[in-house]
Structures are given as structure tokens and as C-alpha cells.
Image (cartoon, rainbow, N blue to C red; front, side, top):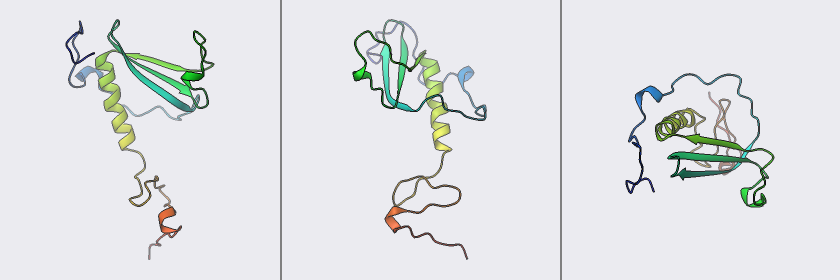
Length: 125
């Protein structure tokens, strides 16, 4: 466990300055596969955060022992890199579409037909 002090290296409490990433995302964004199940773990041997992302429909429990999935994203991050990843992810998610205060679904720039309002949409005068 990380909090018990059993790590050999230094675990930063905040994002290290040199690892902060505020650059714009590369455009256009093209998906390689749709993420389904994601796992997050700590590898105490390498002292790294491990993220596994499986595509929709291919769950980790369905993969036979020792067999590799057809597609999978595997990321191993040092603690400082993990802090930078979290900071960047929070910024990207926070810049997304606002949520409807009634139903919680995202509001598009053109508006939103809220199911809780029976599809009623106010018009600007």
C-alpha cells in the first residue's frame, strides 16, 4: 500500500512542475476503440500506477487465464506522471458540456430537450 510508507521512491503530493501539461489536444480526435471496463491498480514492484482499458463487450473476467485480449490499452505511470494525468483529465472533463440541472444529461451548444420537462424547450424572445 502506498500510504503505509513501504515505497522506495518519493510519491509527490502535487503534480511536479515539469510534468504539467496545458497544451491543446491534438485535433482531430479519432477514437481507436470505445472504452468499456477500466482497471486501476498499483504495482508495488515497479512503484507505478497501472491502468488497463478494455473495449466495450470484452470484459476482463471473460478473458481466459493467460490469454491476451484482442484489444487493450495498458498504461504504466510513475507517481508524478499519474498526478499530471489526473490534473489534465480534470481540466479536460471540466471543459466539457455543462449538465442539465434537471436530468443531468449534457447540454449541447444548440440546446437540450430535457426528458424531465417533457421535451419542452424555452425559446429566446
